[in-house]
Image (cartoon, rainbow, N blue to C red):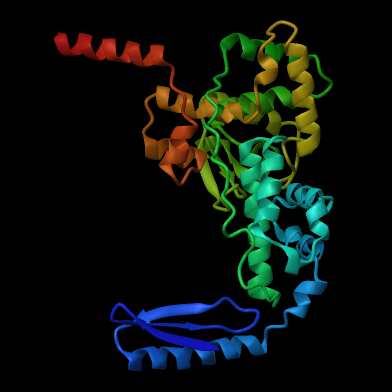
Amino acid sequence: MASLRKRNDKWQEQVRRTGQRPRSKSFQTRTDALRWIRQTEQELDRVGLAYDPSILERMTVADLLNTSLAEITPSKRGAASEAKRLEVFLRAEWAKLTLARLTPQTFTQHRDMRLRQVEHGTVIREIGLLHAIFEVARREWDVPLMENPLAKVRKPKAAQGRARRLQPEELVALQAASKMGRNTWLEPGILLAIETGMRRGEILNIRNGDMDLEHSLLCIPETKTDTPKTIPLADEAVHLLSGLQGTTTGKDRKLFPATANSFRLAWERCKRRAAQTVPGIPDLLFHDLRHEAVSRYFELGLSVPEVAAINGHKDPRMLFRYTHLKPEDIVAKLRKFNTEAAS
């Protein structure tokens, strides 16, 4: 059904179809308005031929989540963590709702509830995943949703980046505690993270064939950004990798015989032992070692492009979030500069 009226020297028209969002527009002339009405009615009729609103009454959110879990998640590099997140969604009461009953408020309530349980960053990732699933459902699975129910759900503001630096006494305590454990790979993994700024997953995936220690280079074929990179190695990193290389044979053999979970558990046990001498160390995350590495790069005088090339950051703004320079070091540099300028 179409309606047409003249108001304030303009023709205002609206076209409606059952089960679809109304379309409206204004024109200077009645002829243009009638032409737009005919075109819009034809377009909505074409859409309506494929639109079966009864599907929304039969299909639940859980149906979409299970389809995504079976068809999309397994092909992702982070499949394990995404699968766990989807399993959490499937236990929620709103997963039982039919798509016809969904409203943005369904997910704003979920957002507010989760903000009381987990960090803002976790909620942002959850909303992003749900939005992506509904978008795929609309565009690729022929689910007749007129709009994404999360399109208008406001994401929480991201928390400020951590400013945690590794203190010298903490490193000493971690090294001593790691030697008390049963494995021999935790201490090299900690030191390698500090020397290279590599992520835990990147460290655990290092293979013999990825290293060119003669030229102090390490290839990382799989990264978080899906862009392979080759990083230069400092002498200490070369020394660490040389020691690990001698424990494995074969080009495709990994240097670290540990899974992500076993490494995580070993790290947590190491921190608990280290806390006996340095009480504040349990607050340290393994990812903080990456922050430490980036900060040290800048303190050594490396430029932004050089640090970005090592760590793989494409956005300098994200690189600066990882950088936590010590104010006292900057003061020392300023004094040195002033002294040299005066002389």
